[in-house]
Length: 152
Image (cartoon, rainbow, N blue to C red; front, side, top):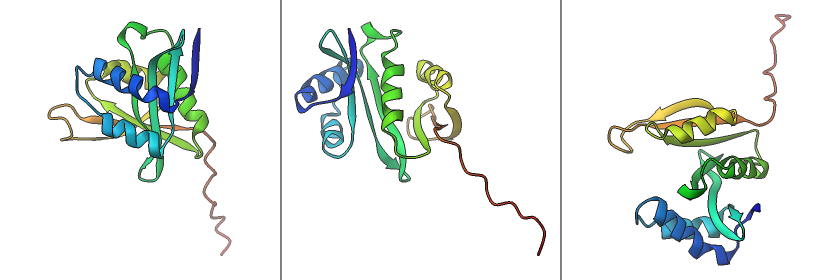
């Protein structure tokens, strides 16, 4: 059974281990710890074990932003990433949500496309030769700008 829920403090060590597994030992323990302290973190549990997580906050120009989405390789293509992204959307207090991924990360680009995100721009020189693509999803209708009736 799969459950998507807010991470608890007991999940911290499991999230760090999953992150290190997926990124071949690259430790982001401090980053993950700060996310636990200052922003929401959601986990995907499969049969009680953490198999994915998402970190999101309002760090992107004061806009809601999915900073990190990780799913264990053995549990991909089972809907966990979709469920985690939807959990982030439900937690979003604004009318739009942003995320980003490297140009080389085709699975994340396909996920963004399937979930209704659209490309919003890119940033070069973060990872040499692999631009960061920025995506946005509009969650609520954006009010129309006032129309000028020309009756001045």
